[in-house]
Length: 50
Image 1: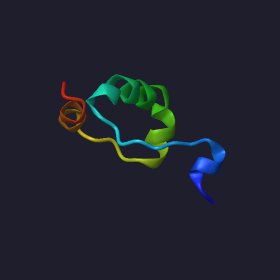
Image 2 (image 1 turned 90 degrees about the horizontal axis):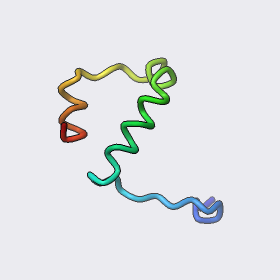
Image 3 (image 1 turned 90 degrees about the vertical axis):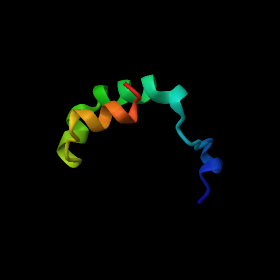
Image 4 (image 1 turned 45 degrees about the vertical axis):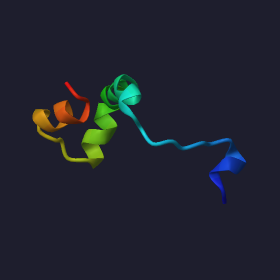
């Protein structure tokens, strides 16, 4: 199965994606909290350059 067969394209995130990724994570926080341990605030600040 190729993702391209389903119209899916993957690309490496860049700094240009930071705001959209952060919004996605915040919107889906309950889902992530149930399956992924929280990171310290300083780690997410470094990841998003804030």
